[in-house]
Length: 429
Image (cartoon, rainbow, N blue to C red; front, side, top):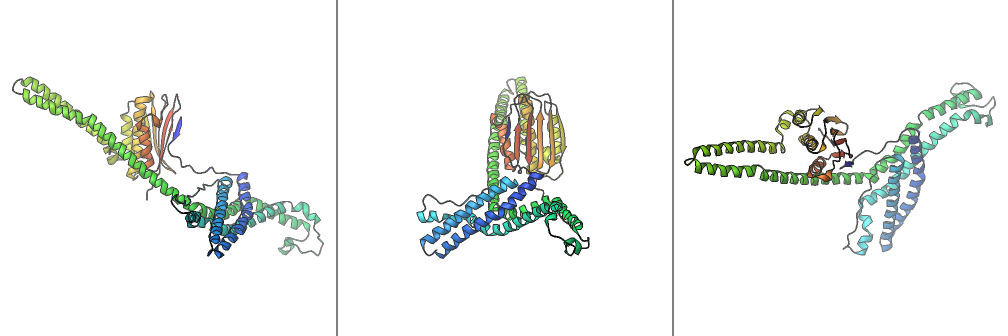
């Protein structure tokens, strides 16, 4: 089973001839679509503005804004379907249930994104015209230049005719003209992928800025909110777990230690030998309590991680794992503390699960940097079947990674192998 707690993958990139054809189709259809938006949206808005003193004028403006919104939805579909770009849908302003009828009808006019959609109806005509012209000109140069050798025979040409080849000194007659036009065709064909990309981006760039920019900002705000909520949940869960561990472990030992010391004090005059045994037991309990408190403190701020860094902390953790684990840690110094801490707990939780549940004969830990950030991978050859829903460990770990705006993926089909992978973005500014 493969589970991804958070997935922020870039769109699939299309290459080759298909990319050229899609860019060409996108730019070629940009002009008629943007022309339709211009001739429909602008007259409706202009008429509504002229009649705004009347109720029908505001209603017409609302209609014009909604039509612009429809063209904006179509353009986002074109960006996703033809260019493979991420084009998120923005959240439009919605009326409340307790608002009056007129205010609900005029809600689209109060929405900032609606006016960005209207602006696209104007800007899109300009960019669409440019994109359309580039596509037509370049494809015409390719088709006309490469086939000129065939259809030039149908052109009237005599000894007194002035051709482009003769003007630039290549010679007179049909052959120099064929060579020149064929050269134009070859040049246009070789540069066709880049020019079609330029034509598509000429129209797609402003479209993405006007139609998706606000949605991307809303998405960033949502991600920050989700990360903050996840951090609060993870912190609250960690505190509850720490409180439970202290209550079930050191606190019980300390209560027993106090009781044993009280018994020893009562026995010290009656039975000194028995009192000595009780004190020795109390000393052993105190030692075990100190060790358990140290273990709990490592779950809050591992000393080795703070003193020597992530690579050394992971190495020590792997050496203490009951299952043989090999480590490959190639990380730079100076990583943000929250990134190192999150990576440390990924390895700690994964190795704990390997030791307790996997039945594996060996495990591998890889901690490396990539273009996406810090990547932590823990794999084993055990029985598999790990899942976030099976316990609090992986679920809490997923919340911790989400709080760091990262992604946790668990791949653990029945029969194994198991791979726990975390990608944590790193901002080293």
